[in-house]
Image (cartoon, rainbow, N blue to C red; front, side, top):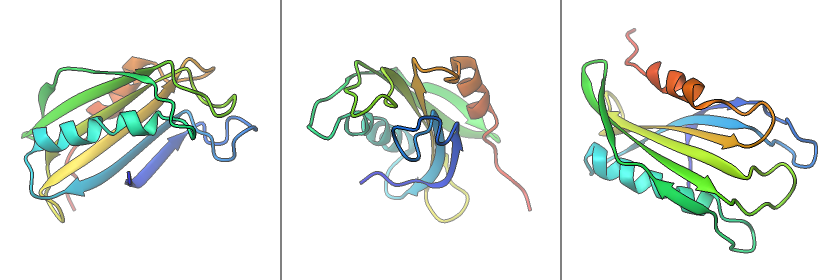
Length: 144
């Protein structure tokens, strides 16, 4: 099962053929018992399941090398899965997509914080890669 909380959606219900179709989804979850790189690799490889149709046909998925950076002075790592030739269940399904996973040590309920940006590509109004990069650049620790 793949579950995220704190979901954000871009272009929700953009296509009438599929209730709730969206062009981009962001989300967050946590993970315990592993380091940030292991957790990131586990999550980015879930792209294969996400981009498999109801009949079990799979997309071609390529994985990036890790990009290391910092978030609020703490280590972070990013992996991107790029899916192409995605089998379509309906006309709302994209021909390609990116699945970005960013991990950093957590401050609260889990050891590792996991952020996701799943963006469908090849459809009208799809987000450009620089916009996805901007979304990821806004991740930071909040202070109360």
